[in-house]
Amino acid sequence: MTVQAYARRCEELFDLGGYAQVRVAAGQGLAETGPGPVLQRWLGLAHAAEDDDDHDAEAEAVYEEGLRNWPDDLGLLVSYLELCLRSDSWEHPGRQRRAQALKERIAELAPPGTPQAAQVEAALGWAGRGYWEDAWAKADRARAEHASLRADVSRTASHGAPADAHPEDLGAAEVVATLEVLSSRRHAPLRVVHRYRVVSYVAAFVLSFATNKVLVGSGAVSFSLWGWLWYLPLLLAELKLREARQLARDRVLAAVEARHASTS
Image 1 (cartoon, rainbow, N blue to C red):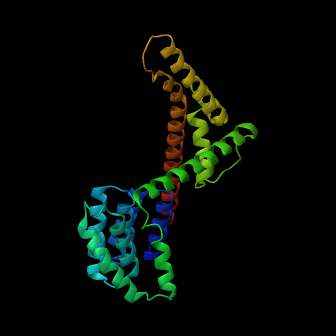
Image 2 (cartoon, rainbow, N blue to C red; image 1 turned 90 degrees about the vertical axis):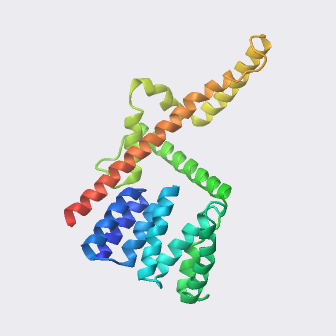
């Protein structure tokens, strides 16, 4: 396989959240095609995407090794700058110092007004967000994805699943996996929660409030949080949805890897 083929493979796996698989593919590519900045960058990105201190350290080592060999590669420079900007300045002051040097070097290689500078700005657009801003953005994205999946599941349950869905279609795989995870009889209440989510949350709030008020009013307790137990089915429903999405992602990743294995 060529470097470009390995890079396309890494990009597909990365978009699906298969960061471990990206590291394997990038490592295989580097071993087969020899050292190069493209696969070196993918290896670093797959470590940095794990959002873990140990993986961040691995990503930093990968970027530094790459920049020793290819000091003017914009991909490596921008990826390393992203890592430095996302790092905590108290825990990793060295990365914050390196960020300034990386910015200066990138400005030399991609002066303002050039197409390369526009690409760099687009790549770094998310990196300057604060922790809470990033957390809220991730939460909003997750809520939107879950809402879309619930709508697809409800539609499929009513009209049936489309025939011959492509094994690499993540949306279809998520619908199938959700129906599988919630198919047992004991999960019938969770299916109701997913189908009537707004009603379920309103009912949980009313029952929670009423339960706490009755317990306190009866003198059984002076303060009650027992009513919050009515929210447990809603929490379990969300956990099952996450389980289904992970199952679907694993299946699609396996399908992508099988395709690449058959063509390599």
